[in-house]
Image (cartoon, rainbow, N blue to C red; front, side, top):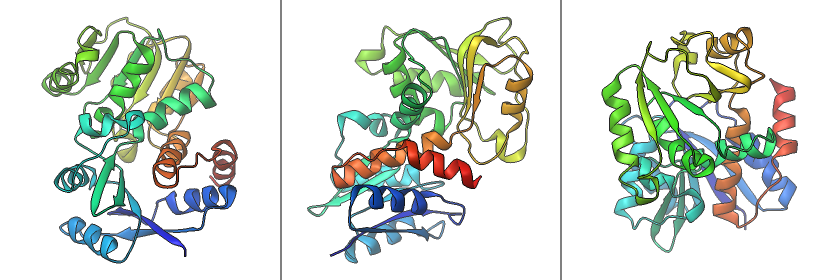
Length: 283
C-alpha cells in the first residue's frame, strides 16, 4: 500500500517539496505519495488531525505554521532525533511523524543548511567566522546546528538588538553552548568586521529590500548564503558586487532538509546531488 505524506502551508502553491520527495521516492524505490495542502490560517491543527485520521504517515510544515506544529507535537508526546534536536530549541518544527498515536516533531532546517554548506560547497564550518542576519524563526531554527558545526564565535545581526539578545539568551541556556561566544549586533553597527560566512535568514528578499551591510563585510574566500531560493535577492547582488567568493540561494538547503525529513519517515537517506541539479535546471 502506498504511504501518504504532504506539506502543509499557507500559501503553498509555490512549494517544490512534492517534486523533491517524488524524486527521492523514485531514486530509493519507496512507495509513497506526496502532495501540497493549503490549510486555512486558523485551521492547521484541524488539517493535521484530518491527515492522521486518513492514514497519512507524516507531513512537512512550512510558513506560517512551524510554531503551531511544535505545540501540536508537544501535546502528542514530543520525540526528538539527535541529528535534528534543534526543533525543540527553536520552538518550531518543519517535520511531523505520525506513529503509534503520537506526533513526533523535528526541525531539519539547520541540518539542511549545514549539509549544503559542508557537503555540497565543500566548506568546513569549523573555526569559521559566521554572521547570521536575522533573529526570527528561520535564524532560531538553524542556530544550534551552525554552532555545533563551527565551534567558533558567531554574530547575530538584527534590526533590534533586544531580539538578537533574546535568541542568544535562549541558546546559551543549553549547556553545550554556554562557553561559545555569540554576540548581538544591531543593524548599522558592524564596523569593519569581516566574516568567512554570511547567512541571510531574514525575509528581506521577498520584498527586494536591501540590508545595511558594509561593503567590507566579506573576508577573502567568503561564502554569502541567502536562505531564500528561486530568485536573485538584493543580498546576493550586494555580495557579488562586494567581494564574496561564493554566492548562493537556499535551494540546496531546501533539498537537504527534505532529505532529513525523508530519512525520518522512511529510514533511507536519498542522494541529494542529482535532485539539486535537476531543480537548478528548472529555475
